[in-house]
Image (cartoon, rainbow, N blue to C red; front, side):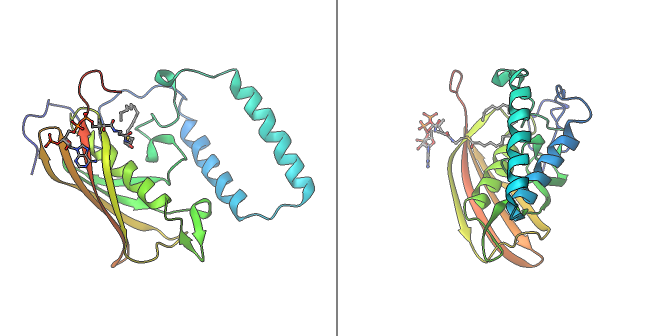
Length: 207
Ligand SMILES: CCCCC/C=C\C/C=C\C/C=C\C/C=C\CCCC(=O)SCCNC(=O)CCNC(=O)[C@H](O)C(C)(C)COP(=O)(O)OP(=O)(O)OC[C@H]1O[C@@H](n2cnc3c(N)ncnc32)[C@H](O)[C@@H]1OP(=O)(O)O
């Protein structure tokens, strides 16, 4: 059911209608490499020579990137809405496949970096993914910026690492500034985790 009163062309998740700037066409591939690096690092037991080589390479890249440091408004990381996961690596990559003004569906695979233990995803990474997906849904389709007021997560069964999972988030209701949103993560038919949250539209001047 489309939300009424939307400015035309205000865009949904898959068609955000927001200009993309910064990082150029190769930026997405770099973000993918960074994700692979984090998963590879988490899965490795490196020898001392490899650890030294990594330390040198990381230090050299940190120094080189320092020359390109910008303020938040110019930052590229996390602001490329054309890329899955909007080009950040803090949360696992959510790939949206279907969206409308009130919902989004897609997939996520938690890599080895997000391991808690015994093959299960870390219990903090799951609300992180929910906040990412629900928070972004809250701000789509011409809605103003909002912030998470609360986010309740129920862990219903183990969320496995390295398995493609389906993710769904949808608006339950909108009452003035209050946006109540629900979401779930499933492994096939098995419900792994579900969440409900309140997102509050920011007032003018609120950070
Ligand atoms: C997010 C904007 C940043 C802009 C980014 C720009 C570009 C980035 C590019 C892409 C980004 C894309 C997607 C983003 C993805 C993920 C987003 C994640 C979002 C977050 O991760 S964001 C961080 C965590 N978040 C906070 O850091 C919030 C800290 N906090 C506050 O900033 C205030 O707390 C605030 C503003 C929330 C409310 O403050 P306030 O003063 O405006 O409102 P007030 O307290 O008056 O409440 C009004 C009515 O809501 C009820 N209410 C309030 N809180 C409630 C609660 N907890 N439970 C039940 N009811 C509650 C009251 O009871 C009242 O209800 P009633 O009107 O019926 O009396």
